[in-house]
Length: 331
Image: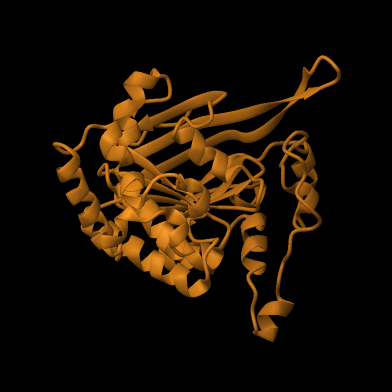
């Protein structure tokens, strides 16, 4: 049984999101894609938790389930100690203000028919923040200055801005309602490297100034190493390791985490020769392997890995879902 943390900002308990697979002329349900398959995760106030993994592992679905953009199949979501997963849409509305999303593609995230002023003010209008049109316009101008954009450009349209500028607009829009938690879903992956650094520095400055908490969903381990406080590694719908960032890169405990780190490009011949890579491609989440989901690709698999699901082993500085993390003799 998962124990709720008294000092957690957000806590997920056995969160599940299954998508039905319909086949045949009558489109009957023939199975389910287990996009999120029993995720336990805790985020503490003021930290940056990076959720990492291969494409298709379910990390984006976790973020969308927290925001109720996709309906969870099961499990619970707690925010500031209160369960929010069972609330009605109206009762969830105050929490929706506190949790905001910054998406991967700022071009598709912004309505091309609206001016930048209208885009940023959407949340102000929806939550009736500010006295009226003039006051909200002043708020938009202040937010644009905060993200290093010229307020005079608020009357232009999103297509008139570069990709990095559009992402700054998205960040300003998210900040407009004074959120506590920002879920950044691949927020820098569509940008050039130099622009990525600028956006990360902006997010870091905003976090220090506004005491924000970030859930940073990404596959870019270089960004993770620079930006994150803790790392949660996800594979085929499940969390397989959680640890502080420094420890993840220095001494990863799960074989999948080691394979991810080994995939980082390197010019060091010694490091390249020592790489441990995952074997083959990830299985389909519609038909996950029995036992440990990672065992078909793991070079360190044990005989029991194909038969038994590994337990979640609590470590001094995190957790690992692997038999190899058990005390010696138990594995």
